[in-house]
Length: 469
Image 1 (cartoon, rainbow, N blue to C red):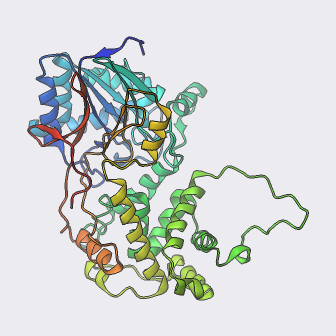
Image 2 (image 1 turned 60 degrees about the vertical axis):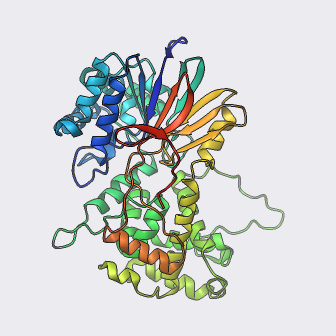
Image 3 (image 1 turned 180 degrees about the vertical axis):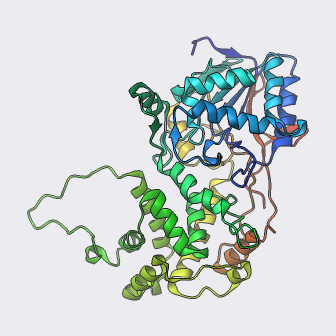
């Protein structure tokens, strides 16, 4: 990118997850987005709009099973065709065309759900169809811009998240080597082979079985809820997506508690006296993710659970091997939590929801915020996405950190995360009785400073929300 790239005004959005309409598509804020794009298009002075990753969602395209370099431009064109077929008030493609035709600069940058945007061939499709610019190099990972004298540095935020990391270097290396595909990160496989099938799953009368799957605040909460509702199906999907076997999950949970130690089947033996320990090896992201899930379950154990080590191990092996029937009615979610494993899963889900409530507080830094604020210098506006948690935080060095959150539907967490309260909350989600909320966050940088705003559909106002109450 030219060193002197400058702008009089900047808008940044991320994590829209635009995809072809259908049972795998989750974006529902078409009309508010079109209204915002038209508001920007009407600006009298030239503006920049940076779409900072996961604006498009290739993983939601029907039939998408792997990242194909030859098919990437065709998939991008097909996704735009589907969006362009919407009526005018919902037609995001036409709104983007109006914005660029009015003389404003549009940059579409990749995230982990639209990694194909790293490819020049895909950027060409976007340039031809909606007038986007490549002045910010898509495959660089980090972009920089000067806005009215302020240094703005942006990144989607997935590159240091091992479970979701896929960068331009991976795709460009595959392209240089003549490879037809590039390996997807575990998080993308989780979407394609676990989340998408749950989006498609229906009862005999065509009712979606898991209508809440996109409303849970983290992949950990999703997996815990699915293990509660249909453990056999959840373990089947995890095995296909990440190679996680039921006995490995049980072993990891017990290892994380310390109650079974090296006596667990398959656990490594301790080195003999005077024998050097084996060298440490880097942990695959799938193993780290499994360890984090097991850690959540281990932390939810009660003293009674720990005292009944052998019984708990047997019940977990039976539960995760598919010997527990699926929950088929939302009313059954309200039944008393029977069995040690189900009670443990409910407590762990409550813990995951409580952690999500904290993560969505707009002034509380999360891991991504801490990494970015520590790595970038003074008087810098740092803008990220990826986590879906909108944040605006003054940095210790005198700058501003902004995370542009998501435009997907969010729901309030239960007021209490005790077992009964979480059961009632999940049952309401299953019945679609929990109100949904679209925050529509927008980062704005201009002569008045850098700030996070909320688009109401008609106006931008200061951001004050975390998750709705």
